[in-house]
Structures are given as C-alpha cells and as structure tokens.
Image (cartoon, rainbow, N blue to C red; front, side, top):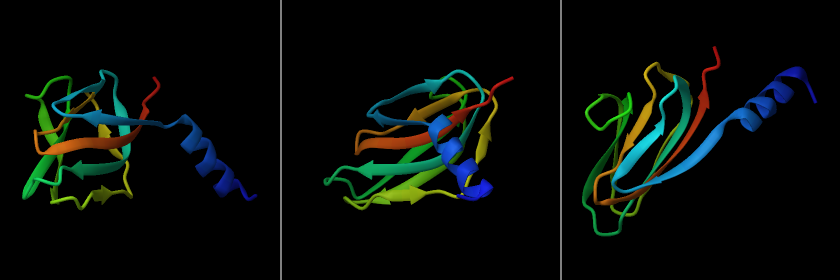
Length: 107
C-alpha cells in the first residue's frame, strides 16, 4: 500500500463515529475536525433541518445546517470543517438521528 493510502486508513482509525438521536447533544467539548455527516430523517417528515454547532449547547453558532426530505438521508463529506469550541449536534423531532464522524484536535 502506498503512503497516502496508509495515511488515510490511519486517519480513519483515529476518527470517532457517533450516532446522535433526537433531541441532540454535545458530542465533544474539545476542538475537533468534522469529516462526515449523515442526516437520517423520519418517514413522517416533509423537510427537516439538522445543525452542527460550534460549542457545547444548542445556542452555539451553527456552522453546518443540513436539510433532508422524507426518508432520504442527506450525506455530506469532503471536509474537514474545524469546530474550535467543541461540537453540539442539534436534531429536531422529525430527525431519527445524525451520524457524525470527527477527529478531536490534539494540542
């Protein structure tokens, strides 16, 4: 395997993947890089919006807002986006959950 492929796999081993259910929660209080997000809407929803917030509460600044319709998941990749105050995932009632893949920034 070439060096690039090995580096990508090493990064994948270090990344954390979590599924956040409604109503949302703080994922980490540490700065992190977000690499991948998948929104899983409920079957009953028309249009739904999930937010990834730069901080520890649902009042923190939203850096990413994702919209999904019906039961069609929204997938966003090709990041990273840096969250310097931690990561809070907000999921409204018409979202079953959000899968987020991130890497904590080590000092």
